[in-house]
Length: 444
Image (tube, rainbow, N blue to C red; front, side):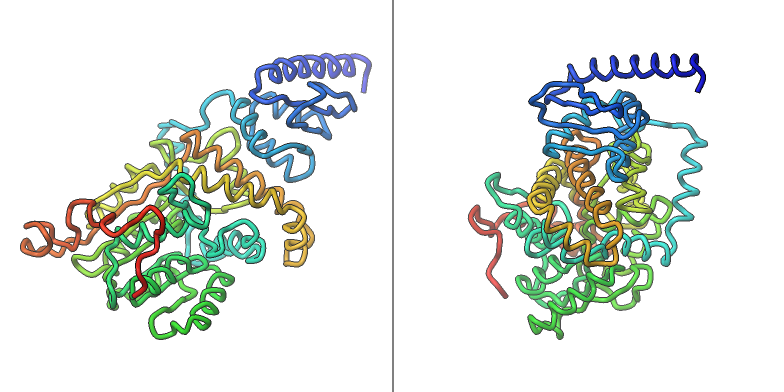
């Protein structure tokens, strides 16, 4: 390096450090930095300390590229000391603006549609689902509730524990669907079987669940055998597109699944549900929605981080787009509920649970197929859970439960003339038997 080049670098570093020092002064929690040259910047009693291996990481922080900072942490180019809750408060303050895109450029939208179409064949979807959900059942068990319900809980009472709120959510869905003994019930993307088992054991339905995760399928099949429910509950390793439409279901639920379907497959997804659902039947679609009217990743590199390390192939749509595709498929929306802040609290519960068991999580991951990169997987999930909690709290992401029906065309069916379904067109039935102390109804 020439003398002039060295002077230019020194000037750049000094300018960068001054900018960083100015940023630190405006953060909501005290933050200290260890710079690549060894010096320390910031208060001695900092709540969060970030240590950088090279200057590019510091430039990333100065630019507010939170997703790239997260990648640097996963790849050990940046080290973090402090609570994840404090780190997320810092991350939100570093952003130069909102990460919710409002890009209306037609060329960008066309490219996104082309990418969506190419990313979601049955084979690719299976690989993408297994990439995330088959990390390790024991790892997920460390920070999920005992039923391993891996979706937004429902804090009907503010003093509920995570486990209680998850049971409240399962029952909330069953009540919305008006499940009754003997009905044929389908759970698309059944996970570790929480809803499937709750519906069978407490509402007496004949239940079928499907998943693309080998680990989840094996776990639920063991539960079915242990509970001796072989005659009423089935769990299959199957893509929703492969289901036989002739069998017909009275009620269908899809919880935390349609985020993996893809923008271009959404009409076919709801079309498949329409044909699987008996006329007059009900379907509940519970899933994450985008904060932006235009489908896209979160900005500041956060969407790219999730795509690379957590959910390859995941796509989110604004609720308005979801309702459009659902309606075009022939389904009628009868109730929509936004549970966005419930998911923020759920994710913080997961994050706090993982943070309290980091050593154990490291040991569990080290005994799986991820032995060589157990630390990297753990760091990615730490940021994913806490970062997602922040995104739901900020309103960058949403969570909607959409209840819809397939009208049967009979004006005399239903509680009101023209209902054309079992839906009573009021909400009283959802709460008629509920109590504040116990979300579980009497067993069938």
